[in-house]
Image 1: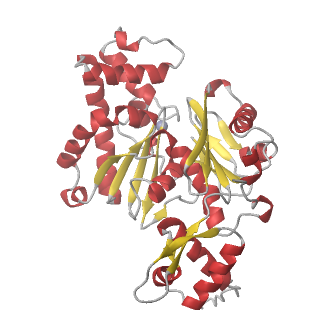
Image 2 (image 1 turned 180 degrees about the horizontal axis):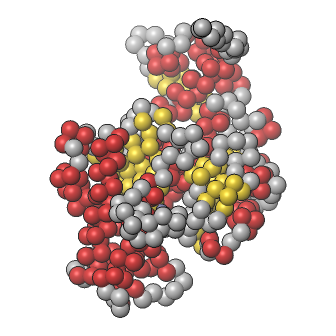
Image 3 (image 1 turned 180 degrees about the vertical axis):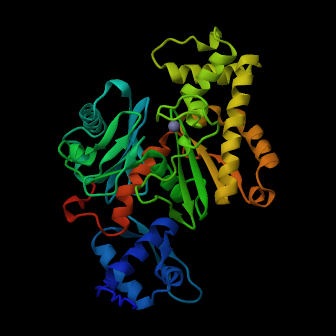
Length: 415
Ligand SMILES: [Zn+2]
């Protein structure tokens, strides 16, 4: 017997949908005239006139100038009002916490970077440090404080998509920690959490190397390794929002012990501690392993990159092996997903990228399927150290562009 499935009646708010598409068009492709908006959105001239009247009244957009038109009256150019409000993006990494303040067009205005000692910090201490960081970034009473539309936070863990925004991170021994609620108890702003690599992928897709592309993969190499996979223009999340855990894909059965509890994960070879283990296996007493101890991982990776530039054989061999591990895994990505672009970022990715990229590309030429490889570019992140913060700020930006930013937080910035 056939089941009869009736679709629920939905109220479609056409006005809101039109407003969204005009705002997005102006945001990502503007400034432009009403006529160009009409051409690009395929909305009628009358609809554009009405929507723009609303957006001008709400001060989301402003008239930025005029251009000559063919034979007719000059056309008014419209632009998004970058002073309407701002966003805070936070990168909670395994060696640092960085907070950036962005204007509406995601131009960075201020930054605060603090070192973190993850193994010694509880979720409450993390929430306290983020709250203290926000006070340093935007001190109470600062004129900007009333205009923050929202705060996005990228974390090295899995963020469940429910209201509570629970975070699980086996590396920190966090199991469904209600971190979103813990932050809301301290910070009176709309809070949005996501995995750091997924956040970085949003930034690369909207503002970085992936702009205009529909099939891209962002790989974040730091202490751990994560990725964000965009297929057909959509970020691939999976039912538990844990897709893209690239660092825990296997490259060697029964290989090195990984922090996730398994053996042979990519992260155990090509994350910062993995690279340092490789160097230690090659040369247990290498002077490259000596640091001032304040920022161990960062200094040793820096020593290796500088050593390789000076033709130190231990450093060169360490980077060669790291390139091999990444090349094997990138080959799997190319063959599985057929991406147009793979973006390499994260603090280790940025440090070693220039040194390994030619050999990485060459190795992919040899090992990936030729047809897939021919369509894939491998590039460094253009957004550098701010990529995760910027991606985190994309979370409240997405809400703003969807018209979901609450009126409580719609206050104009005083120029
Ligand atoms: Zn693992």
